[in-house]
Length: 192
Image (cartoon, rainbow, N blue to C red; front, side, top):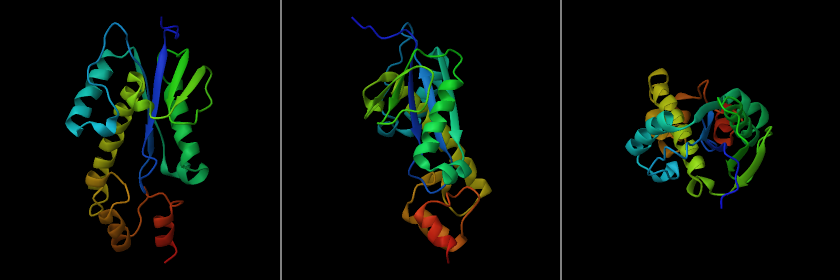
């Protein structure tokens, strides 16, 4: 017998590792009467499948929310605190306040409900999987849009992660407004 409260939110974030762009979090309360097939850790799904599932989640979930912490916040309070802040914002902006939040990872944000941190939760809990999918699709789309604003960096391809192409672009073109100045490869470029 499942004795969990009725409104359980899955919460996850995407974008702790990149050198540029925001950290994006999502919170999702799935509808037990309206299941979604194929939910999994967003990193294990193709881009096309993630986008299809994201649309289905938005239609079928009881409630969902996507929030972010921007580059200035990341540089000011560090990436862990910015990730927790984005998660907190996501839970607080759900249309239905959850009775329990299942958080991917080993840290919980400050919330006004019961919480449980679950390591690798995005592959264990469907609601966390749904949150990881929404967060990844939202962040990827935001970084693709940066391609036009900052040509030459390859944001549509690497989404701000520290690939060889991205590190070379930073050296060649310099840093942009969306680069995280507290991250070592960006700091090193600032010091030149």
